[in-house]
Image (cartoon, rainbow, N blue to C red; front, top):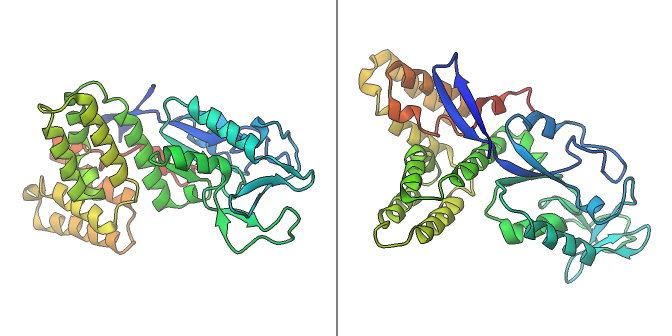
Length: 327
C-alpha cells in the first residue's frame, strides 16, 4: 500500500495517509463503456487518482455485452431478473457468475464507487420493470445485481454512487470511512498496533458512537486473555458497525467539546467564546465541518497540543478532497 504525506499550512505538521483501494465503475471517467458508448460527464477517477488506488469494473462489458449495446433492465418477480429486452436474453445467471468470480478474487479493498441507476451497479436507485417489454417502470427502485452481490458479501465495506458523492455530508462520511478502513488494514500484526490505531482515532470514534467507542476499549483490554486474531476480528466488526452510519451533529460537537477541554484553560475569554460560537454555528448549519476543523487546528498548533495534533477527528483524510472544485 502506498502513502500520501500531507503538509498542513506551510508544513506545520505532516500527516501520513494510506492510499485506499477502491473498486470504481469504469464509466466514471476511465472508459467510454456505457450502453450508449459514453462516460459519466465528470471525471471522478481523474479527480481522486492522486489520493486513491482504483480497481475498475464494468460488469456489463465484462460479461461480453459490448459497447455500444442494447440496454438491460431489472425485471420484477419472485427474484429480480436481468434482461436485455431487444434480444430477449436473460443474463441473470451470467451476471451472477461474474459477480461471484469478481468478489472471490478481490483481495484488499476499502470501498466502492459505482454508477447510480445502473441495472448492474446501482445501490437502491435502479428502476424495476414489470416485464421486458413494459413501457414504464414500477413505482419502486432496487439494487443492481453486481451491487447486490457487494452488499450481500461485503456490506461492511463503505460504498457510494456518483450522485451521493456530490453531497458534502455523504462525501465526508465516505472519505472518512475509506481512509479509516485503509488505515486499519495496516494495524493487523500486534495488539500494540491496534492500541495505537485506537488512540489516534479516539475522538473521531467518539463522534460516531461514544458508547461503542468504549466497547472497543474493552475489547483491547482483553489482550491478555484472548489471542490477537480474535481481538482483531471483534474489534474490526464493532468498528465497521459503529461507523456505518454518519455521526450526528450533536455527537460531533461533543467530540469537539472534549478536545476543547485540552486547551481552553490557555484561552482568553473572548477566544473561548469565539470557539463556542463556531461550534454553535456548525450546529445551525452555518459553518461546515471542515471550517470547524480548521478553527481547532489553529489552536492545536498554537498551544502545541500533541495529543490532539495526532487525532483523526481533525485529519480524517487529505484536506484537498474537500476542495469544491474537486469532483
